[in-house]
Length: 146
Image (cartoon, rainbow, N blue to C red; front, side, top):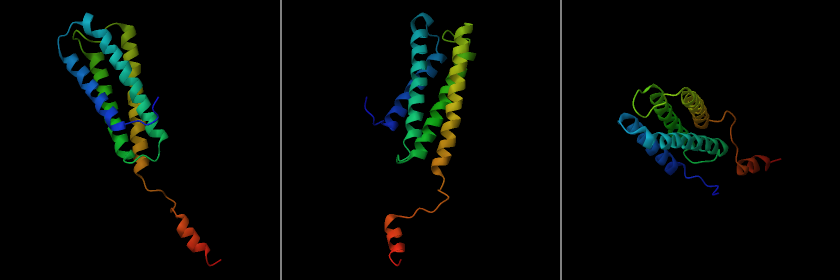
């Protein structure tokens, strides 16, 4: 698997899938046709968001890392919203059986936890280090007189 993650494009694709599910929940679609696919998409989004957050947490040298954490946090918020809608909707495509409700509730709790993690990590990525950073040239210059 490619070790390089294109965060921006992945974020865009996940956002598109979230919007698609949101639109589906607003329609009067046939559950026999769309419920399983919707559940597959929900599981895919959950797994992908977990991978994206993990990739961001592991790579501390990404350019615009703080902004990427913000985007992932926003995705998690939108994902948790559609999961809430899926749980609370009385429409054709909804989580009406108890085992499905439990599974969706667990996914929603995970999403909210990942959102908190992304927000905290984003805030930490944007903070200035407490200790001054000294380059090797500055150290050489300082030690030259000794």
